[in-house]
Amino acid sequence: MTNDKCQMTNESVPSGHNLNLGILVSGRGSNLQAIIDACEGGKIPAKVAVVISNDPAAAGLERAKKHNIPAVVFEPKNYKDKNTYELEIVKELKKHNAQLVCLAGYMRIVGAVLLEHFPRRIINIHPSLLPSFPGLRAQRQALDHGVTVTGCTVHFVDAGCDTGPIIIQSAVPVKENDTEETLSARILEQEHQIYPLAIEFIAKDRLKIEGRRVKLKKM
Ligand code: GAR
Image 1 (cartoon, rainbow, N blue to C red):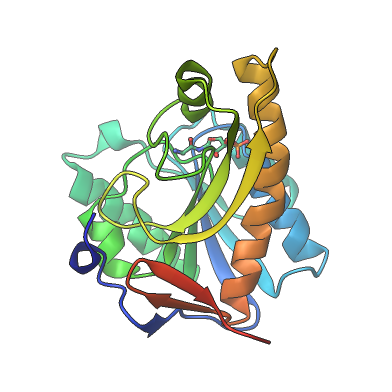
Image 2 (tube, helix red, strand yellow):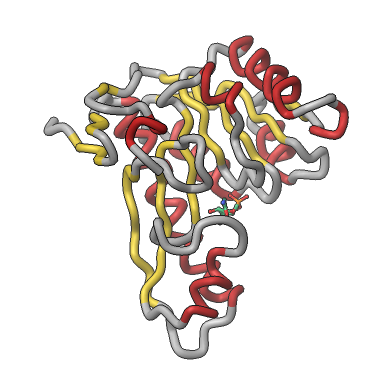
């Protein structure tokens, strides 16, 4: 990834009190839950305005409904191409005045349409210390590689796969007898800590992107 691909040099990130969040999920939605809980518990000045899934079976949709959050499904197979599919998502996000888009286990590569409509306003959580182990099954990749430390990363989304500027990371030691499941569970605990924290930084206008570096402004 290059800086110009990312186009994020020296820019403040949009923020505001009660920042409206649009969350994209594909499955279980435990990160979504952590974000909802942090918003409802008053830990971050933000609100989940809408949850969107590409999969009607995603458990994240039920989590949203339990909190009276609009939960909407757009299935890619119903659209002629990726741009048309993403345009529907953009329309829905704008209908709910989403200011920041959070990918929370959204297992699709974000395309040009979403990136154009939400420049520097899409973030993602990934279960590894990027740039190590991008893409699918990051925890399995870490075990197969034999690393002794892995973790999770929240980053801005750009046109690459898990390549955008890094906001925050948390390290997790790999234990000798770890399986993909045990390691994933310990990483997930950290994900639930750092994702709401990253959103808090954005909601409080504390981030500044300088090329690949994301700087945390002093309070
Ligand atoms: C999380 O571990 C998240 O980091 C990962 O999917 C899981 C979703 O869990 N995302 C990716 O691998 C994206 N490349 P959740 O649905 O319970 O939040």
